[in-house]
Image 1 (cartoon, each protein chain N blue to C red):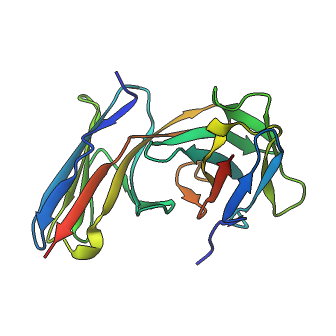
Image 2: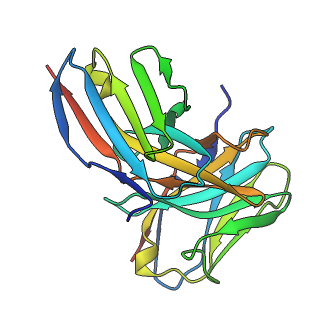
Length: 112
Length: 113
């Protein structure tokens, strides 16, 4: 089983649509969870951390289910500028450092 | 807003040559990282660095790779003898006291011919 698994997409959605991405992770000892966004040939940028209680940041909502080892991201009222690859990222703190483990990413294309 | 910077943005080198990739992490951060992303593939962890020593490294980070923090601001990745398969985007990242969130630099695109 892959350490972090995501549907690669692409998800093609019209502007204003709601879209959901899912992710599963294999290491039950993982400590922290994130969604990063990556534009073509650019660096990953932190979108939001993911907490067990669920958290929201504007149009973005993230959920974590530790029992199922499942993470989700919901984007409401999608904009053209949301077009990017969304990376599910897991961090298991080991020793004195933190190793981020990335999924392959889910590509989103928002269209007019 | 403080950000991680990297130089050069692009580097082309011949197989077998040494390259040094440079990074300036966010100034009050204590944890430093290198990741790489081969074109079309996922971002992969290479190494983490804290308190002037390597805290963790991946299988990719073999004897050809080394990291250094030569002064209070720079963090470098050296590849001693580059191979064709080292061609990738190399990202530096840094993190603060929380040990959680990591902020990435814009990357250096390395092409080995």
